[in-house]
Image (cartoon, rainbow, N blue to C red):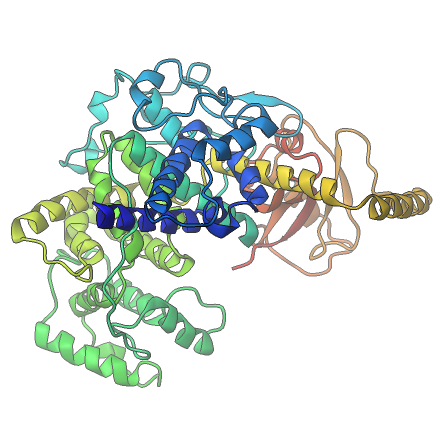
Length: 570
């Protein structure tokens, strides 16, 4: 019993470290003010997931008779509640849902509530009705799951079948803009990772599905070459050839080779290449690819497809990662298709950048194959059945799975694969409730930093700011702008900034178009597809805005932001 408990406690410690909450336990448990800020932004279900794991560690440490301070889990959350009054989702601090009391808290549970800037946004299931095919990104997925008592979405349960049986899920338009992976600054993406991990765990807790990160048996890996080489080493090699590349060059080339002929070839991806020829090609690629002497004219389309699948299978660590492969597989066991999609969305956020970028290119390619299904006979179901074993089969966990279980898993993961292909655009979206939590963390951190400054420095800075302000008042390019007006800078397009009057209908794309339409004073020539309006500072690090973002709504959410037009970093 003790050994089992110890092992579980170690898993929970690892989870808290991944979530950025390692200072809630151990010798550093007294210095957890940063974690208190983080905890203050969590929903009730997220808090319950954290509390459950801290409690497990607390009991484990007590079993081991550690001498250092062991905080009571209730104290951690009581401290945070005392400073905030209410938790982020608007619930009373005394009600923290756990797996033990979840049945009695299903009734009347409200979704998350955020107070960011001017307006208090009420985001509850009662006031925001949505259809079965609407994906609500404003409310925590775990909170939504907890509210689905005697739900009418039984028709959304998982199952196989023809392509047409998958629901036509859609994202309702968000006036403050949709945030995609790659739109946020790295420091905010770290927060997104922590929040996504906690949210996924909370969702799995609510749905009664075990979630734990896996560890692979140590295996010896190649430190050079193409096949059987870790993604990180491949990219390190490739970036010496093509600086800044994010996708392995061999992976890109194999896809290009398949598409060079036509995607209308019947049985594409399903019909294998000639095994002996594929083996020979593999050896030749290893020897000649980086030298540039490999003759691609000898590679037939089915051979290239086999090489592409071989590349994915031969990765020493699966593309979906060792840590989260089982969680991807377990998506098939979640009760509804909407919850399966929500879980996949969070899992994609948890993938390392190299894995995520490579997966995105693969899914986009598979969709292009499916677009020609009338000719190549490769429907969504067929492509998913062919590709799932390449992504989901991994024998590095140190145990052998019986054939029957592998067969059952193959059928289920094919359904997961269908979801990943069909809804790939949704999966690369960062849920708004997570972006709001990032904003809240930044706001709380800024407040704390101001309080921590010494009074002498503060007074000195105030005097300096007053002097600077007086000087600025005398200059024509005054940074102070009237109410309802923002000043936009575009250093790549113009030497001067532009004051923009906010209206109800003004969008980010309209502002970019104004700068592009002005020929005089241009610093360099850029197309509309190359530049974007960025929201910088205030309660966000940096966020690239989609063209349909309504600027007045976003300004109300982040009135202290600066606005800059610039090219998007690749």
